[in-house]
Structures are given as C-alpha cells and as structure tokens.
Length: 50
Image (tube, rainbow, N blue to C red; front, side):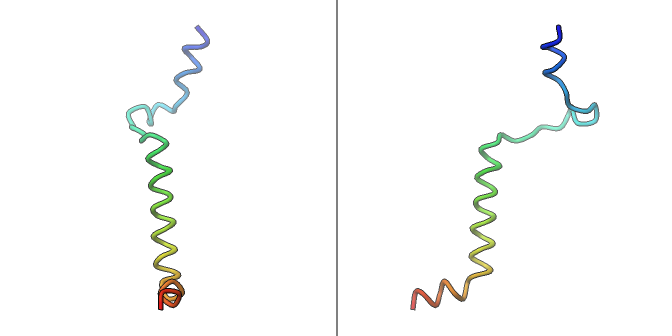
C-alpha cells in the first residue's frame, strides 16, 4: 500500500500536466546551446573558415 502512495507524489494542480520524455529535453537543450553559441561566436567561426 505504501508503494502505491509513493508513486504519485505530484501536487494536485500538476496531475493533469503532461511532461515530455527526458531524452527530448536533453536533445532540445543541446540544440539550444549549439544555436546560442553559433549566434554568439558567429564572427569567430567565420574567421576560421576564411
């Protein structure tokens, strides 16, 4: 009986919220980091290509 109780520990207002899988969050974080670095270091990257 205690195992079933420990399984559902989310607050009552968040029970209906659907969370994405963790791997999609990791992929999204990597894409955001790479995109931000490309924008921030755009001039340095293009200077290496010349």
